[in-house]
Amino acid sequence: MKMRIAIAGGGLGGLTLARILHLNGIEAVVYEREASRTARSQGGMLDLHPESGQRALAEAGLAGRFRSEARPEGEEHRILDTAGRTLVHHVPEPGSFSGRPEIDRAVLRDLLLESLPEGVVAWRHRLLAAAPRPGGGFGLTFEGGHTADCDVLIGADGARSAVRSLLADTALSPVATLVELTIGDADRRHPKLAELVGPGNLWCVGENQILAAQRLGDGGIKVGVSLRATDRDLDAYRGKRDLLDLFDGWDPGLTALIEAGDGPPIPRRIEAMPTDFRWAHRPGVTLIGDAAHLMPPVGEGANQAMLDGAELAARLAAGPDPDTAIRAYEEEMFARIGPIAEMSARVQAMMLSPTAAEDLVRFFAPRPAEAATVD
Ligand SMILES: Cc1cc2nc3c(=O)[nH]c(=O)nc-3n(C[C@H](O)[C@H](O)[C@H](O)COP(=O)(O)OP(=O)(O)OC[C@H]3O[C@@H](n4cnc5c(N)ncnc54)[C@H](O)[C@@H]3O)c2cc1C
Figure 1 (cartoon, rainbow, N blue to C red):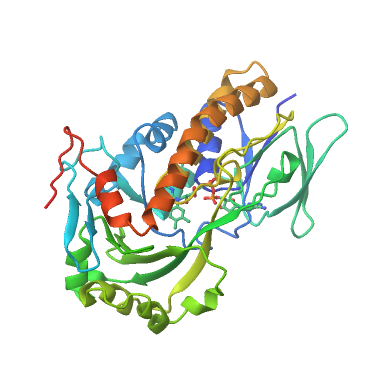
Figure 2: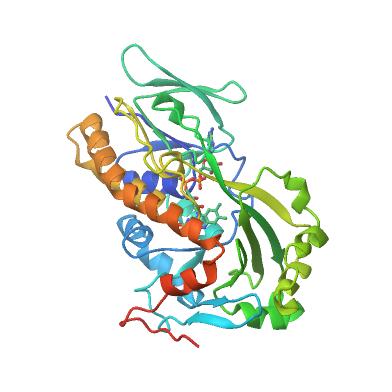
């Protein structure tokens, strides 16, 4: 009998998994809670690393599409101090994909969605519960009362995974407060800010706080204020004036990024799992991506989610049975993620420290082979 694989969550991890399974002739159903692919804005840009995100896309047969959609120039980044002085200015080699080219999240998700046959993604299916069946596999219950059965269940359902509780309990801890704004059509409406941000990323680094800006594929700019985690009510960050007060003494040319935001600031808490989170193997079920290892957002989460999807798909395709495949995937994934989660926690702490500017300059110090300039 054909193995029925259910993937909860159609984010970057779940879709990469479904695509590579499909290439190997294994059909899976992706149950996604959103109503459609356009139901929610997917956020800003991602840089895909050669050894993880780009490798997963190559295994998905999508390297060519990625190259035509990605923006290698988006890898350019600048680090400034609070007075607007440039501390680091990294310029990638023109047109090179050997570094970490940026791609719009929505474009990347579309690229994966379009690579799947019609009907693989079941939209409007929020998984509420999974109950083990006596003969193996799980009975799934979705919001609205739909049900389905599967032999193998893969939780690709992000930070607040519903599948995770089948395997282990863990608490998420706050690691930062992020307040975001968007500036649309920046080249025409705010040319000075567009020039300041450049084609990639800008980080203006103060004590315990960062004002960052990222060029989007549609010509806009995403502005992000990162603050240390606090118990303060998020409503305290919903007004531009309140936010600007946190930047007293900073160069007005930098805080203009907040003033130019099109709508009110949108605050949210950023959380992470303990870096040593693991579970004991249980037949027929596993986790990938943020469901398995939620890390501070310092550039690894999506890359590792996609690599998880690629590695699990390769294991399931190689056989000999799903359980051996899942066990092998889990051992490899835990060994790979441990050091990455530790590094991400260290970088996050460094970015929001009193000495962040000098620490970041050291962190980004160019290696000899890199095309970088430090003004
Ligand atoms: C501000 C910020 C910036 C970031 N920048 C980067 C970066 O530059 N580079 C990088 O590599 N990573 C970055 N990350 C991390 C990255 O976004 C995540 O690690 C990545 O999206 C994880 O992919 P995923 O597929 O595991 O989960 P998600 O992308 O969260 O996808 C999970 C999917 O599951 C669905 N879902 C959730 N619950 C259910 C349910 N019960 N039933 C059905 N469907 C469900 C959701 O709707 C969603 O579509 C950033 C994160 C943040 C917050």
